[in-house]
Each structure stands twice: as structure tokens, then as C-alpha cells.
Image 1 (cartoon, rainbow, N blue to C red):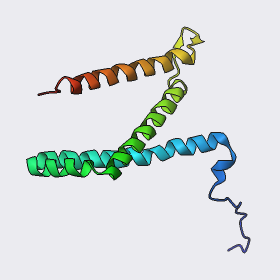
Image 2 (spheres, helix red, strand yellow; image 1 turned 30 degrees about the horizontal axis):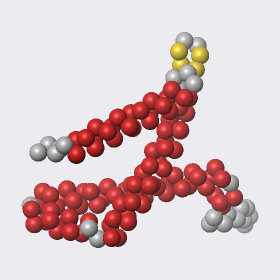
Image 3 (cartoon, helix red, strand yellow; image 1 turned 90 degrees about the vertical axis):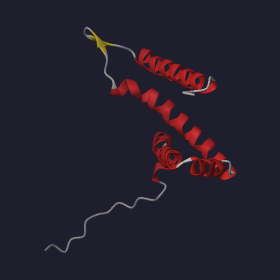
Amino acid sequence: MSKRKPYVKPMPANWFMANRFHTLYMLREGTSVFVGLYSLIMLWGLAALVKGEAAWNSWLGHMENPIYIGFHLVALVACLYHAITWFSLAPKAMHLQKGDQKISDKPVVVGHYVAFVIATVVIIGFVAWGGAA
């Protein structure tokens, strides 16, 4: 066995702070923590709904806590940041072309925003006019 020691480049914990691109990338990836936690809270609510009215009302009582309200606001901002950055990355993931020419990025990004606005209006309309009730 060799007695050589391989070179290990020292890397500080905040290495991504030196480059703006890396900082924004790490921030975008960090939003997944809030999305995951929000999903778990919603699953908790769904489980409470299945268990009956008492469990559902208890869950609703928990959601009135200022900590949960603050978390939901932070999760909303994280989800919006994640969506906006994903929309700007979508043209790199979708290589569209017409004939031999590549379609510019703008129609893909605009299409994502239009779909986002339509989905938001439909969901808000569904909730505002009574949902399934």
C-alpha cells in the first residue's frame, strides 16, 4: 500500500458565497426544504380529514398558530422563488426547434407564466365559489 497522501483541497463551508451564480443556485435548492415540510403538513391535514371531524378541527386549530402562519408565508415565498427560477431554466431543459432553427427562449418562458396564471385563477375561482360543495 502506498504511503502517499492524496491532496485534498480545503473547501470552506460557505464556498458558494464567493460566486453570485452559486449563491442563487444554493438558495434555489434550499427552497426544497420548505416545499418538503409544507407537503408533510398538508399530508398531516389530509390524515386528520380522514380520521374525522374532531381530528380535522384539531388540525385547523394548529394551523391558526402564528408559527404555522409564518411558516406558510415563508413556504409561499420559497415556492414562488423556485417557480420563477424554474421558468427561467425551462428553455434549457426543452430544446424546441422549428425546422433547422432553434426557437428563442421567450415563448417557452411566457408559456410557463401563462399556464401558471391560468392555473392560479382556476384554483382561486374554484375555492372562492364553494369548491366541490
